[in-house]
Length: 77
Image 1: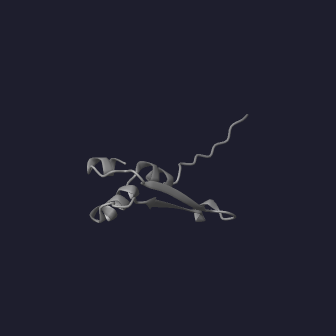
Image 2 (image 1 turned 90 degrees about the horizontal axis):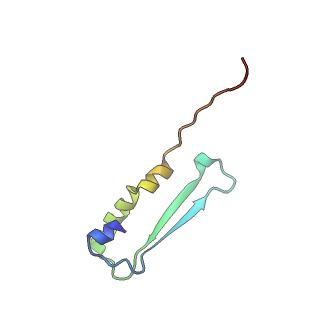
Image 3 (image 1 turned 135 degrees about the vertical axis):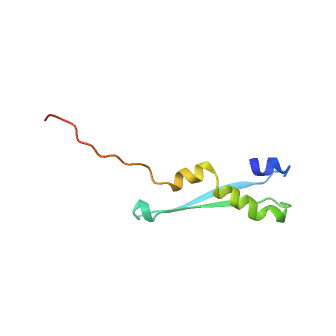
């Protein structure tokens, strides 16, 4: 949205969907596919740029990064 707002591009009709391919697969082999639906009249000169902006999105980066994992034991010594 910021990409379009910065360039004064109308966002009416802009949409985002996600397809999840993970049924029966280990998590590390699952895949989320984001699909951006560009509205009629979206400037062709910005098509690649908006896809690059999506790739830099903080949410996408967080989902693409593995979480930290800590293992510990508690109890009596």
